[in-house]
Image (cartoon, rainbow, N blue to C red):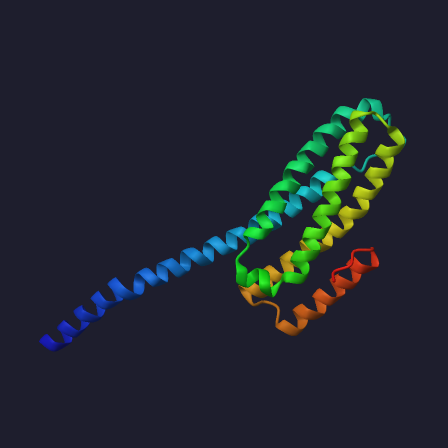
Length: 188
């Protein structure tokens, strides 16, 4: 009886002092990595919604909408810059495994930021034709942004939850890559 109690006590102490801290650290690391991916996905969605609010009637009076456009563009720029800062903070293992869609996301962010800054400048100068052109470009980029957001969602599920097996994830990723390339976004 004494040996069984001593063995149980020793096992409990070993688990409590050696294994449990490592398990807790691993759990915290997994939660942190998951939160980073969630932040990127949330920012993609927030940016998509903000850009969607810029798609109003082309016959609208831009002078009346100038302050609205300026506010939305400022918010979109803020979110895009947060997103551009959040993507490189993703865990290295995740980033290496998903480098194609991360690269396409960063390329798209560069194009989008350029269009947003140009739209901001055109709005400040009240150049209606330029405003229309940049709104059309942003609308096109928003479609690509939705595809990139979808690839982050897909990779999150296949990476974190193992819901999608590798072959199926590769096929969906290939289809998304082809869709992005058809819209003029090369992923080389």
